[in-house]
Image (cartoon, one colour):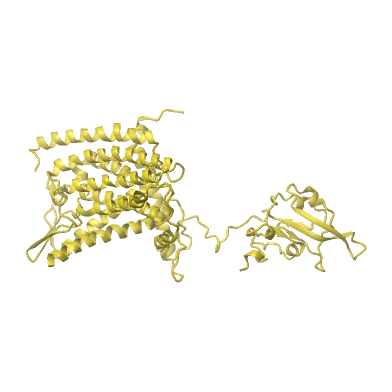
Length: 182
Length: 362
């Protein structure tokens, strides 16, 4: 560590320069706020995103809430191969396989539950899936619940999800767990 | 009868000013810091959808604090524990009493000084009240039956002593220059002109005293950068055991002390209610121009000038609070005892020499 210079030890000059800096911020931001209030939309005095009304743009690569991809007839594309369940480091996927009525398709999940309370959003399930049946592109980040049971998403919940729009905004409504519907 | 009404009016003005401004300061502090830091600040509290830039947040805070549980630890001293926040707030409010917010108004041959209480030893009174504020801190720390609170209170007391001594010594220069302990006299004499054109404000005659006073004054408000009595973000302070409105009263006491320090700085160093070159008849500029104004307008302008100066000082104090990091405890002690106090004494000596050379105090 270097010794402070005499000017720094005297402190007062440094304090004044610090105050000048913060004061400059105050008045330049204040001017921008006032200009904004008078109709200059490009003048922004703050970097705040007013969250519930405004949303931060998400990267299309961001891993968000999972969804199960549907076939054209609406049944899951998943063939219950258990790859995702095997690779999942958090062990949050639970699959029960069933026979598919179509003999060309081997299996279909009877149950496909994801416990989001355990999920670490690593995306390995998406990587592992040979059928491209699970994706994490819904753009949904808000799925808090009051109890653990409500954090478990079933096959029907996951099949109902839509991918996010090109602007990254979720197209499915944010799922409200049963315990939050008052 | 009319005298009583006038006296009550003066007191009411001061109490209303101080209490309401302290409520407003909660908003000022949030918004000023937010704008300084490229944020927006609290803006969600609303009445019928009207947000008013977060102006309702102090009201919402007060409602929240009033409706919270008023918890008292089992082993706490009942009387002192309840009394401490009131003591803190009370001395914060009454300290403003002898600060003049306007000139001595002549009305129907009556002399009405625009200050709550006319005291010959006004300065001493203000400092007595400011120093008594530490009793609230000590009572809170001791009566909580919590060792951390007691330690916080002791840090507070040690800080107060080192700050108050520096404050007392730094205003000795002002008293010597203006030759009075009466704050109204000091404010009146700051209206004189030096060399015919410089207003004889305390900041001109006592620049060193001003810096020392301001530093020690900030220390006595117990706010950042001198907030080791509370240390709200990590170390525990004297009001750990308090909750609800009693805790809110400690916060309010800090804001009240900020207002008192701003008022004192204004009254002693920034010319009080004086507007430069404004006399009772109107403006009289040093280059010979003059502008006559009605007496009522002059008084109004002078009271307005006091309010504006106090507001600017509060702004500066808030700016300092949101800019500087906290001093370490030993740094604050060293600053108080080895920095401010010796410099204040030096200031007294220098002022004495200058006053003597210029022909004695007037």
